[in-house]
Image (cartoon, rainbow, N blue to C red; front, top):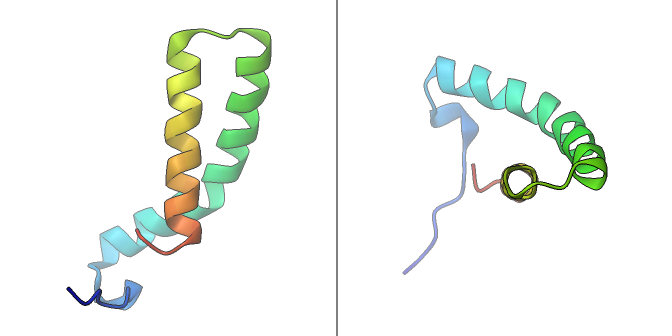
Length: 64
C-alpha cells in the first residue's frame, strides 16, 4: 500500500488553525509536564506526558 504525502493545505481552515496552535504549544506543554512528572509522579501525569510526546513526534514527522 502506497502512503500518500501529507499536505496541510488540503485541510479545512479550522483544522489548519488548530494544527498551527498545537505546533506552537506542544513543546512548552511537554517541558512543563516533564517537570511536573519529576516532582509529582502520578499515573495520570506519566500518561499525559506520553500523550504529549506522541503528539509532538506526530507533528515533527508530519503524520498529523
